[in-house]
Image (cartoon, rainbow, N blue to C red; front, side, top):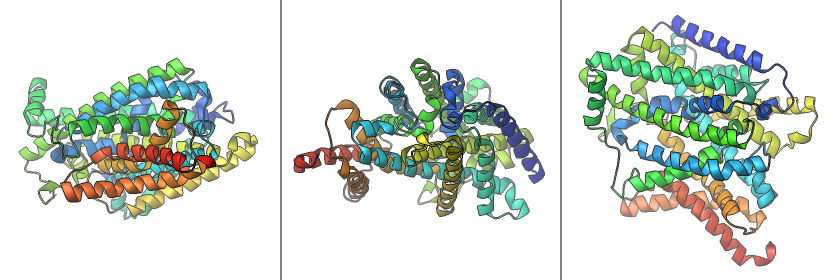
Amino acid sequence: MSPILVFSIIAIYFIMLLIISYFTSRGNSDESFYTGDRKSPWALVAYGMVGAALSGVTFVSIPGMVSNNYFYYFQFVIGNVIGYVFIVYVLIPIYYKLNLVSIYTYLSSRFGEKSYKTGSLFFLISQSFGAALRLLLAAKILQYALFDSYNIPFPVTVIIMLLLVWLYTNKSGIKTIVWTDTLQTTFLILAAIVAIVVVKNSLGFSFTDTISGIKNHQYFKVFNWDINSGSNFFKQIISGILIAVAMMGLDQNIMQKTLTCKNKKDAQKNALVFSIILAITQFLFLGLGIMLYMYAEQNGITLETENGVFINTDKLFPMLSLEHFGMFASVTFILGITAASFSSVDSALTALTTSFTYDFLDVEHKSGKEKTKIKNRVLFGFSVIVFLIIMLFANSKGDVISTIFKVAGYTYGPLLGLFMLGIFTKIKIIDKTVPFICIIAPVATYYFNYFLLAKFNFDLGFMNIFVNATLTILLLLLTNKILPNEK
């Protein structure tokens, strides 16, 4: 595919984003960047959030991962949907009742200042790593498709992408993102559908043949009952529920968009519809994965293996789209990966900026000009942090999506423990011990998982978030018993 064509596609797409940014930035208030003035139509938010939640990682990693993990990931998706029921009927009413901008303010009123700051800090760490890993994958693909042709170094590619995101989010923040996300979601889903049609036609399949081919393929294994496996059904369902609650319901990125809806009922409708669309879309990408491997098998295309396991599976979809599927599929793929990368990073940087300025800099009580100056500096600062994390993981292999969820289990676990203890009990904790406990719990979880693997070949998988949250709660309760006079 011609580098000039790739550049033209990205340029046209970016101009569209700038046009949307221009129109949404008119008549802004000081709070538009953070709350969208709470006027977003719920259906628009629900549809647009799909693009941000999927990101380039889902776009590329989920199709590629089926060779090593079959359809087992869908067990996790089922758990996500159940988790969203909890978000809709427990968390969203709390957030609207307290009229929160940063959702971690809840921890201040429930436990104290140290808990509040710790919760926010763990989100900042989690979201920084998540945003960086999502952008890393997209940047690698665009490096291969465009920037290598001009001998542009990979670090410069990443800087260019971050600069483009900054240009259209700087003025309006979440108010712009709610609208740009709809465009990004459309291109992402379109790219998947085009790829499915191209493979279907190439294999000479009818629609019925396609469904039958996927169902009868060796990779179509949905349920895993092996208790030692990290992909075991019960582990995946439970971790799917908990990670949905943590990575969606306790995540400023996702909840900030939900809280731009006009009222609680609209926000709840948004979250329910979003969870269903997201589950269907992820199933679509898993089916696409099997079709990609069927195409590769038929055409003698092989991926690198190591100890009998496919590695660099994230390369499969980009390679086939850009080198084998023809011009139209290549164009839609570039649009899809560009949309996916921008939609995940723009909202992440906005959420990081919101959380840090509200939770640590008390921007709510600043004047308009001072608030804007602080916001710009923080946005730039987090862009630098994301860049540095990308450079740290630039040479990593394997599917990125598994890495993201494993990291999330360690960083979101303490958050999950704090919120669950706060919502379901009336227990008062020793606030000053929270930062230490929230460091001890994930470290202990890591070594516990290492021990289980070494001694019993038992992998916690994504269940590390359950162990982490449980340890956090137990340690908080234990300190209450040991230090009763310190409350």
